[in-house]
Length: 424
Image 1 (cartoon, rainbow, N blue to C red):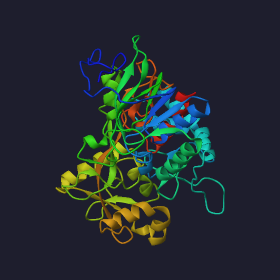
Image 2: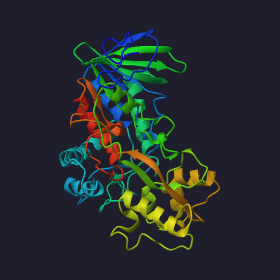
Image 3: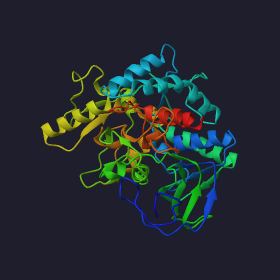
Image 4: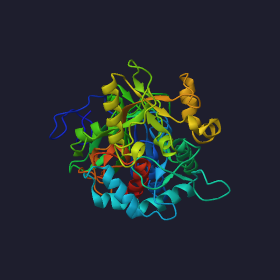
């Protein structure tokens, strides 16, 4: 299947010589917009486009709620708290990005972020509130100098956001195609986007290779963590969106900046695939990184100690492990007590206990694992790629917001803000 012309005959992608071979589409859908991916970025873009009267189709590789969004634990960062400002959020993001962020993109993110979060709440997302109050409860994560992380269900923020958006999509009656791997971008004779070809792999209304014809395609396919042997990403995160964009001749940027999360549950040297994440919010609430002797090794290495940016903490863990000839360090939150673990971090508690580790009574073995692609398909501040009619948002995109290292909990916010900008 060619990615050029009408998509009905063989031929390489201009400038790449690469194509996917597939039968001609056996069915097709006509739309104004096709959104590929069903996380916070994809569903936000789809809902906004549909609300504006555009015929919108959502295509996703598995089920609507199977992407990375539902695995997000810590929360969504925005200047929502008293005394906090977008300028302070900007400063923390620029520092975490190691001097390689696009400052205009970051300013867009932090300025539009608070209102975007409130619109998400109006869409049905329910965030945790402070005891006896209607105010959103805020926590702190690495690289943040203030408590500005809104969370839901303790440590199930992504699951709550996914639930709310999926329900909104179904209530709006949006057309969806699940279990569908997108193969290639279709373009017209002038090189403008005209849709996508896809292969439906599971049961559903459609089967086999088909096409969605639309003058606008929004890539929101998530990351590529499964390229690595150990990752926090779900099985669907295999870099399909970046691959499609490259075959279509789109520019990509900063692919080398893959963030490793410092604290992933260590399951042994043979463990592969998706590993349980131990949210940075655990450290934000006061857990300590220690070695086997119980010594805190982040103190004195950075002004924020355990809450230094992720690249610094990940390197410190590996450096200490190498010095001691071991494979992992420990995260000690025993001083939280059982009640706090059960209330604030029920998902993490259950994951640890399922592997016979009880954080209430013992430190958690942790090691870094591949977590987030800071680079991706290069876009401008409206989500436009270098291919006319092709847009990208969320982890598949490179907006310039993250630089060399994403600030904790900026990912959900980026997906939200730039999806809205694409729809607009």
